Amino acid sequence: MIEKTMRQFLGENPDMKYLFFGGKGGVGKTVLAGAAALWFARQGKRTLLASTNPVHSLTSMLDQDVFGVPTLVEGVDNFYAYEIDTKDTIEKSKVEIRDKISWFLKFADVKTKADEFVESATMNPAFEESAMFENMIDLMFEDKYETYVFDTAPTANARRLLGMSSVYSMWVNKMLKSREEATSLRELLSYSKKKQEKDPLLEYLLEFRERMARAKDLLTDDQKTAFFFVTLPEALPIAVIKRFITWFHDFGIPVGGVVVNMKIEDDAVGEEAPDFVKNRLKMQQGYMEGIWSSFPDVRAIVPLFETEVRGVEMLGRTAEAMFG
Ligand SMILES: Nc1ncnc2c1ncn2[C@@H]1O[C@H](COP(=O)(O)OP(=O)(O)O)[C@@H](O)[C@H]1O
Ligand SMILES: [Mg+2]
Image (tube, rainbow, N blue to C red; front, side, top):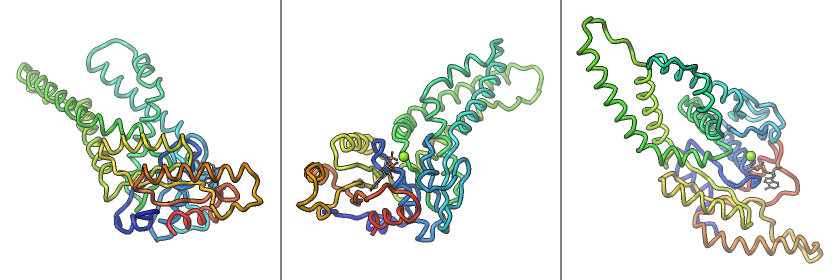
């Protein structure tokens, strides 16, 4: 039995603004995020459904090109969808890093080309991931929408950000202190009374610390933010979200609850159904028992539909199942 449904949960948390859907690949994160966004839009909230997924999942689910720019979904007021251009985001991030490194090398009077440093700073998968994460945070800070639904929870990044932020803040504080000391020493020693020029690296550190703190505030605010975890009644996806939920509790990131997707409805399987369907149903029923005992916060069970979920109408049916 569901103790608190999605609708009840959102009723108790009327300021909910940032929703994330996490879980194993293929469990229906994009579909459920889309259904949630549609539901919020229909409640009259200006809603952005955003994806950082390099595959064109939103465009194909909505049957409408939403790549690169937030686009109003045809036929629904208030519903904007946006597939973030990952390549563009990563390129921009590289340019920014290049500028900073070049500036620093000049500042430190090092006669090396920035390129090698840029290569080593950006040639790793974590860089792309964190560029996407930065992009997501920018969207949140811009604050142009009343509700944001992200189709893939940046699980590793959120965890890293929150785990690192106190350590990072300590580090930045130390850096700042030693730079301030160096600056005042230099001012003391300089014969000319020329005013010290601005220190971009110092400014960058300050700004970055500020951003981290703001992101942390938003991501840990349980009035505004909720991470939902999607699973199927199957072993692997259950194991995956168990791990995620434990991490998230450890870091104080608010977990909104669990959504079970693609459950075969019991009464859909009659005596005449083929064995593989009956067996699958039995298997799911077994895993449902595990789900009930492992997750006290199941919010919805969405049935396995007769087709894949594409287009606004199917999303509406999914929303009905999730919030109805
Ligand atoms: N309840 C459902 N019934 C039928 N098909 C579903 C259901 N939920 C998702 N799907 C389909 O399953 C596939 C995977 O869903 P998707 O949302 O893309 O997963 P993810 O984003 O987690 O990788 C898609 O083809 C989608 O249309
Ligand atoms: Mg997806």
